Length: 243
Image 1: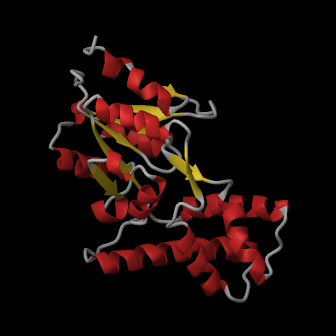
Image 2 (image 1 turned 90 degrees about the vertical axis):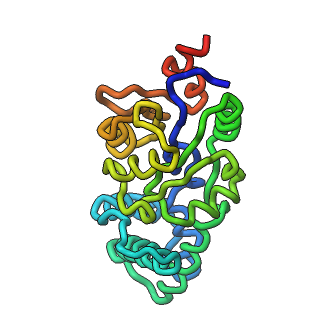
């Protein structure tokens, strides 16, 4: 059992534990090509570019509803607006609604997601060492199905998603929501994520310890960063009282 001052470790999901196989543009084309969208490398690049632009312009996925079925409807409509905006910029096509149904359903399965190679081993090690583990993500409620399909759901004591918490990272509220589920103080928790603002700065502002996953080595600034999840169990913050 760990005697570290850190009692729980929270993780971001996409880009931290798992990611899209290939790219969003490639997945979109997998389903859109039968509707006449040209399956070219240029189209993939354009879709990826438009997707990034659209996500920057979209409001946070926060909804003033509580009933699960209403929440799922709001999440679906939010993503419909995202995908519609992407193809509005690229070129709309007949049958878009059917295409959206297919691609939305597909992203709720493991088909187009893949774990980073070290994810399962690191999560298992941390659980064995006695840490409580949680998720804080701006993903939607499809996370539950995706995590089950990827075989990592059993590692987590809590799952905090923005649409349920009524706040999205980097807002302090979503981190506080997760802390309440563990009945812990911020200084007892480490948050691990790949986004400098949403994960690192957001967690620090909420009083948590934070570490940034920077797999490409491209993030600039004063961040405590690691290149993969493999480094998490050996962080000085977790090791200092264990030895």
